[in-house]
Length: 255
Ligand code: NI
Image 1 (cartoon, rainbow, N blue to C red):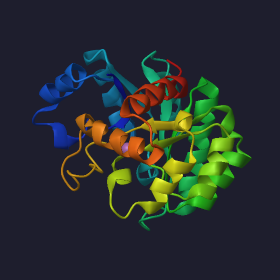
Image 2: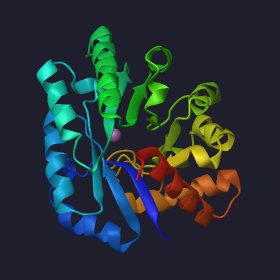
Image 3: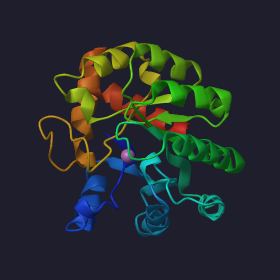
């Protein structure tokens, strides 16, 4: 069994105590590769170091919508330079987050579009974060023809209609711990509706731990709980979920 972890944040301080030990446990348990996702300039730089330390860890660089306040054009140049590394697989996570009201929406849109251009310039797919911003995210991806780069809608939180739009553009749907929650009917419907060939597994560790670990620190070992839930919804053996999502992730990240 091998499992492809498409989205985690092992640079998070929540892992400071036992990072090394935990990461080595992943590989021993068949969880490899792991893609560590960028969300600020600072942590993107950190990821460049991380991918040198662990051979089965890959990375992405990019700035999350909640961290865009002080971005500059110099930062965009730096993102481009960092993305030259062979182990940097995508630009992200980038997008829109209207859940909290603390970052100006127009500014979010500006830097989302700007980073989509970085992805086009360096010919890498994108990892999209979109929360409570369904319409604006879709409008921008369509108007900027971001389907050309390809990518994943990480932690997909919208309904079937939106899933259909993204699937039609060739995007992957990132499914994580939320699918195991009792109240996650909307996501379960999306999983039922989407072809298994369009789904990738992710944890978003240390956040969003699946049942029965909900609320605790998440880690990629729990991907088995997510895969089992998907297998149940799609009525296929769990091995098929591991296998298909692994191939999907290779396609998504082009490795
Ligand atoms: Ni994330």
